[in-house]
Length: 85
Image 1 (tube, rainbow, N blue to C red):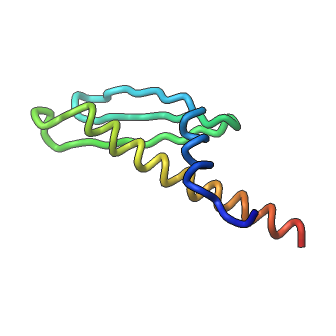
Image 2: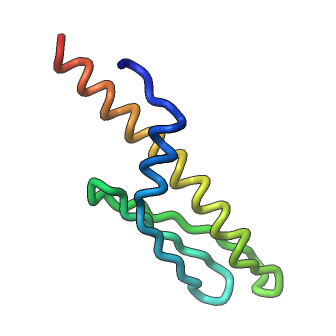
C-alpha cells in the first residue's frame, strides 16, 4: 500500500501514552510516547494566566501531535517505498 490512512493514524494515537502538565500557570505541555517508543512533545500557552484553560491547551497540543504523526508516517512510508525500488 502506498497511502497512509486516517485509520492508521488513529490506531497509532490510540496506542500512544500521553502525559500532560502545566508550566508557569499559563502553558500546557503534552508529551506523547508512540507505540514505537518515539516521543513527541508540544506546548500551548496564553499571555495572561487568567485566560488559561487546560482543556484548550491539551486540544491544541494533541492536534499538533496528530499532525506530526501524519508527517512521520508519511516519511516512513516514503522510505519503505524507495527501499523497495
